[in-house]
Each structure stands twice: as C-alpha cells, then as structure tokens.
Image (cartoon, rainbow, N blue to C red; front, side, top):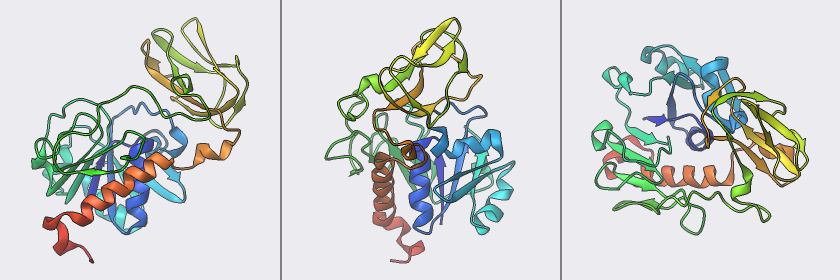
Length: 267
C-alpha cells in the first residue's frame, strides 16, 4: 500500500514518520522551493540537500515517479518535486494525505485516491475529501472527521509556558532573509535573529530558536519566518512535535478504518 503525502513540512513529516514506523510505504511531494520553518524536522529539506534524516528515518530526493518503488524498497521515503501531482499519471497511491495546511479549499477532491485525507481547515469530509483530521490543539486534536469540516483556523499557535502568538516570528517587510542565528540556538530577549531588508527580527523572549526559514529566501511582509520556544531545551528542535504525532495517529486511524482499503491491510 502506497501513501502519498502532499507537503514536506514538519506536520507532513511527522505524519510520514508515524506511518513509516507503522510499516506503510510513504512518499512525499513538494514545491521546487519549500517554505519550511521547522527545517530540522522537515523532509522538505531533501529538495535542496538531496536527503534529510528525521528521527532516524531518511528521505531522499528523486527525479521521477519511476524511482518511487526502489526508494521505498530500500527503506527510504522518496521526495518528489511535484506540486501538481503529475506523478499520478504513472503511480496510483492508495491514500493521498493533503498536509499542505493551505487553509483554503483544494483544487482537487476525492478522485485522487481510494482514500483522500485532508489535514485541518479548508477540507470538508464527504465533499472534497473522505476524511479530515483535526489540527487545532485541544481535546479534538488528531480526531478523525468523516462528515463535515474541522474547527476554523484561529490563527493563534498553541500556548507554551504562557506564550502563544509571540512565539511566531514574521517578516517585518518584503525582502531577502539574512540570518544571524541558527535553529537550536539559545537566545535572549532582544537578540537579533535575522534581517529582512533593513529591519531586524528580534527574539521576543528568552528561549530556543526552534525554526527559521532557509537563509536567502525572499519573503513578504507578515509571512511566518521563524518559531521561538520558551523551553530551555534545544533537543526539541530535532524531535517531531506532539501535535504532529497526534495528527499522524489520526491519519493512521483513518487508513485502518477505511473499508475500501481493508483487503490490502494486515488487520
């Protein structure tokens, strides 16, 4: 059984890790230039680096769909630059997971695979996908929804030690990102993390720089470019988040519960 995940960011990668550990064949599709913040735990980095390891699992960049089978046979997760899913002309995944978190209605729908799973806002189970996984933190995080939409996007990240919106770093203006710090650095309130144009991006509080978009990226004003965590623990920068694991568990549940896939499962 082949599962195709659209997107290679930290949430998509966390889902991929959970499915890979569960014994499924997994592949990812990405943009030519991924805009990923939590790069240390994102398989999207394989697009620029050729390969990326997350928690002992390695993803490798492939050039065409014909390389998928060999990559998964050797234990790797193949990453293909294919935002429009042109690969579906050659391969037919059993499951498509849309993990792009675009928070708007997708152009495609249930026709993509036997089971199409959407993550978070923008999806409506029974209409543009078969199942939606709740991505909003709380008691419903990771819940499988078989009819209707998930909770609306709040625009507010989860609270960590009293900090929520402050944790997100945004571009102060349009321009190229020039970094002064790297992911995993312990930083103090007011530290210059990066420059965008002529403006500095400062640390909002003491903590660890958990994520930062790739240096040299052209960004636009208001765009999310980084993530600061108040916990004094650099190891969190190399671990799949609790949210990603919960959402990955929801995806796994949806796959195991799909009656049209049971003939290909071991249960």
